[in-house]
Image (cartoon, rainbow, N blue to C red; front, side, top):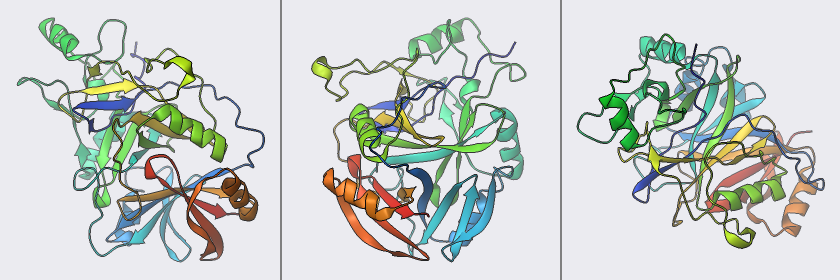
Length: 347
């Protein structure tokens, strides 16, 4: 019988210890009644070659991604969501080449991540591999399901990795779910391939936040996002007095992009059926997303004047006032940890 898919999504090294989000299929709490309906609209990427970048996504995700145009430029449409591109003269910085921003990656749910990963390799696409431990015997793996689970399931600490290795624990790809893996796409974009459900679909943007619980509160209050109820996954310990600031984390586990391991903890909100997944970045110092690889992501509103007026009453910082944007109108605000969020009017 197939082992259940481990619900998680990997991230990069933070403050000497890798930190990451892990969550199941949550039941969402209701958004505030006084926030008008907003919808997830697009992710905007800076690219040296937008035409080539747009042509990439239908290769790994042929069932759900198509090339199109939007506001006169090349774009990708996936469900009701777009990936848009700004043309830039020099390669935009990402987590490997410049200061880290609050956006780490975005990704798709796929019905069988092992089959998808095998197809990626056949197509010659670049796989971003992860470490299965932190010692000299450790190896790079394509998928989270390539690492044996400890008793009771989940992800192993290094101590458990050594115990499982001593017992000769192996993964049988024929019966073990692939879990999650990653592609390194155009301009250095990180794209997740996460096994879940039966339908291929764009499903999340993964964020870094210094205080994920505070960031989630911001998204709920100002964007009407829904905050999932937490299930049985390991969570950061609550702080006395209801303070949303995260203080404690569980121990690092594997697989991991950072050889020290990742600390996995649940967090995030949803806008429509898109998860804004979160993980902590202690100590702050995240750079603005503007001009970086992931320039911003966007929500749409049926009445931009109403949304802008409300956000100004709520004291939200504006980066750009209402302005024409092709055939539409848009504005730009700054969210937690300098994430730029565009507001697009869609009647």
